[in-house]
Length: 179
Image (cartoon, rainbow, N blue to C red; front, side, top):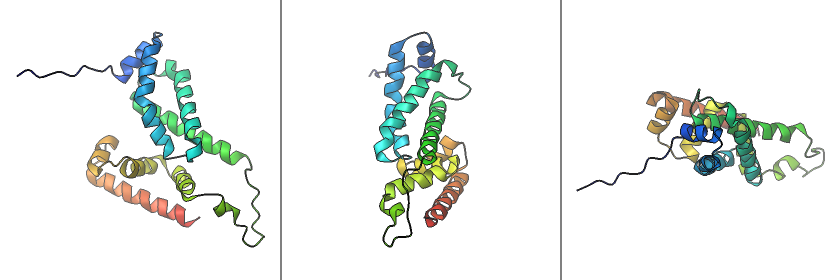
């Protein structure tokens, strides 16, 4: 009985090389390959109404800086760093301007909590956490990865991954209690 072989898909790095040579189809392939991943990761970090805008910013940054990608790390790691930068930019912009004039002197005018829903508060707390805490919480809770998978993806031992997860949750709880 003959086995059917799956066609080999080009690696991310091979697609990047083709894009650098002017192959627009390769860029489309990278876009299709990473759109859901980027959207999902951003969705765990910014309010729902801003996910598409930040996703677009990530892909614009990717296209603009693809020529400088040197494969010192994997392409997916590089994309994740672009996501982190664009999410940080989003929060810098958001908090650099005065959005709401909060007046706590009036009874019942707790604008801070009335204006935010829990989803936004969770995402803001996640943004305050160190990168490695955000990453392990995201992988465990949002992506449903097992501790074994997390340990492999982060290059940790199983016990180190579990310990990091506990510390990340403790840090999250501490930030939540400040609200």
